[in-house]
Length: 218
Image (cartoon, rainbow, N blue to C red; front, side, top):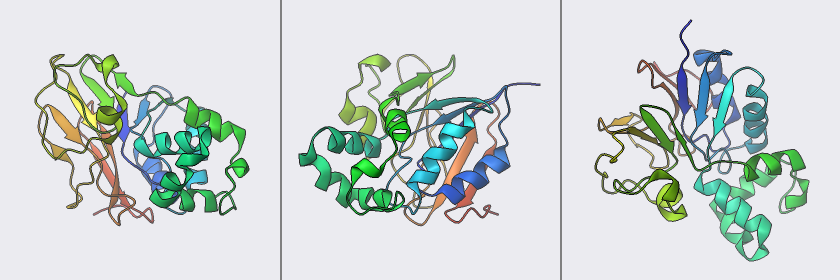
């Protein structure tokens, strides 16, 4: 059986959507699932999303990338001066999923360890995966936080000099369709903004989409 590389876009606390899309894609032991970040904030169940991602590692290989919302949380955890920024950008909803309004201490240590362990970039022979954006002429390992996690696709960057196809999230596609520029694919289709959660098998192009309640898109 061939192995697949399935990448999943920004989830933003919508655990029902994540459960449904994993049921549809049904990754197995030979498959790799690459999450593009933004597991938390905005939606009703950030806790449930993290629990599912951690548990998935028992069934397939999981690559979990850092998003700007995780960076905001980690900044708030390290320095209380950043708490308000995170809280007002969806962190309040994340805390509610842990049964609290403002107590970060209510978040289990295992979840904090998971969020602290997230990597910035993942590469295969043909693709690289990064949360937000990239610079065409920069080595991937040298990408700064602003470019990798925050820079929206206001302008489409040119092909990366490695020749690999970039797969990103972060910039919601309001029409609910994947943005495919050939050398760049954006699979953030607006989950957290009333849109869809998207999963893409980069090995054969198969796409799965569900709405925020977990209903498959027809």
